[in-house]
Image (cartoon, rainbow, N blue to C red):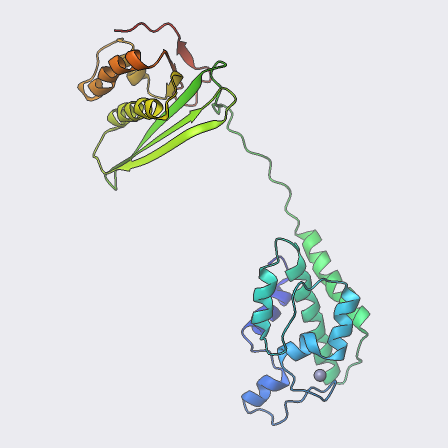
Length: 290
Ligand SMILES: [Zn+2]
């Protein structure tokens, strides 16, 4: 809650129902009389003091704050606050303003009880909201600049009519789990299908990238897309798929998958984006079947 500490402290006491209202003093056997000094008609509970007697009503009508629900005389202060919390999105700042005015009412009530002059509702509202506004103005957070890593790789769409399948794998070594994510988008960037899997397999980083590629390919086939661009971040896997360099045994399954791919997928492009340093993806559009 963006309010001064003195209002926070007051709110805390009110919510815990430990403000020294006459009702609470009687409960604690400090006094025998719990009747409200202002109206003499009802016990001075927090709900009565803040919402239900004539002066409280006058204060709220002066404040022009909208209370979007009916407050029952039986409610505790906490009950009222719970209700207000439900409206914080529709009425931003309402809880803070309400709390500040309640604090003002409480302050005024105490001054009057100690022989001070009772103020008009209008004056209570004005001074309480002034305290709040001053505080909020002084504590305004400057807008945080939108952070953008300098070399952030942005997703780029495939050529028109093609789909792009992005695959990624992650190793959670402590939990001995791996995660695979696949997302298929069309050339307009619209997500066609997505998949995320957690596998309890003790795979290494390279194996999981290979597994992710395999899952991605199968998923694309299942979804029924044919003209695809596969995109992953492991150069080693992409090299293996192109028959470049030595193929580690752990990625043989992906290489085997290539046969399936060439039978089933019309075009297969491999783009790789390695790390944050390499902004421009490398592309091998003329991949030949093995
Ligand atoms: Zn009263």
